[in-house]
Image 1: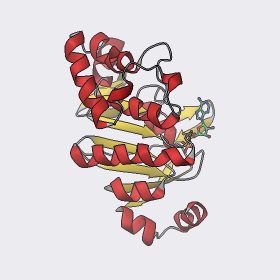
Image 2: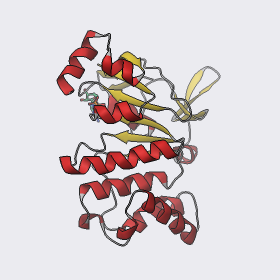
Image 3: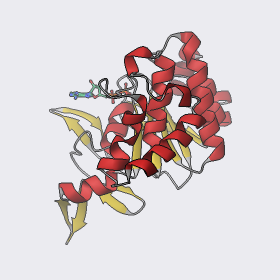
Image 4: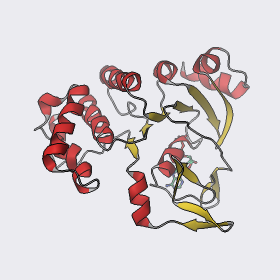
Length: 245
Ligand code: ADP
């Protein structure tokens, strides 16, 4: 994939695959293109070149007779329901209750019956320890609680892949643990693929199958978390980890 913002080439012919059930963490200095990758997968940004496929289905563009052809929005909407994203700033709908936040997409996008969506939402809220707040509104909740609800909302669509974009960066330090604990449980109990951008290196080490170190839009080193964190080979990886650990 290629992504430019004007003349600024942010991702230059980047090529990688996340296999089903795999947890891949992207690390690297600020501005190296990590968030842009997640936003491209979520189709919140438009690719400048190349392709992204989810489970064999192209997103945004497909190849037709050797040409790169934009795919219709209707089809794109269907395929993006396979992707769940959790953002740094929660992005819950402020005017809706917790329950309404979670059932919104299952009812309006997937066409689930309201009762069915609510039953599923209850189970997910239970999993993230938030069932007791189902009638609250986001502004009545702590950042950690809001983020746990955002995770439940992303899972409510049964995504094939969960994109986590610095989900603890906006939280007070004492609230980080509860969110990471929920994510570790989900990683342990499901086989959902995950593409993670985080500054929490211990979390990355605990949940990742593979860590990719980015610098200036390219992968400069990748491998098993133990290898990358304990014996990084690339000088820039060593410098980055020395600065953040
Ligand atoms: P990271 O997540 O690694 O910190 P980003 O993906 O946020 O990096 O940003 C990569 C580069 O893309 C940066 O140079 C940033 O300034 C640029 N960029 C990101 N979003 C936009 C945008 N909407 N418009 C212009 N430039 C952008």
